[in-house]
Length: 112
Image 1 (cartoon, rainbow, N blue to C red):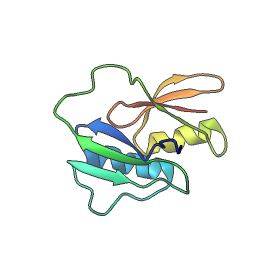
Image 2 (image 1 turned 30 degrees about the horizontal axis):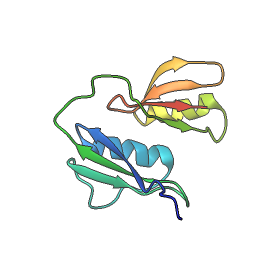
Image 3 (image 1 turned 90 degrees about the vertical axis):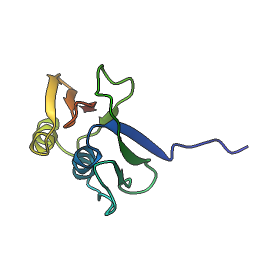
């Protein structure tokens, strides 16, 4: 029997286009040309990763994420954190081997 696989991950957000633009740039891939503030799509860079959907919802983010991405820095963590800050992310906590960040709408993720 074939097992299921993760086809896509979906983020609820206030402005799908803002968050999708950030993640497309962060992951080095493209934003779908039909993306809008209501719904946006970022195809996985390379093979094997899930695609990412962004959907506008009325409710604001109110608590810590129950699931998050861990990004592996291609070079030093400091250089990757600086690049992501330039794209609009903020640093929440700097650790020795891991930095916790938030995307433009506050969704937490880690850089290691």
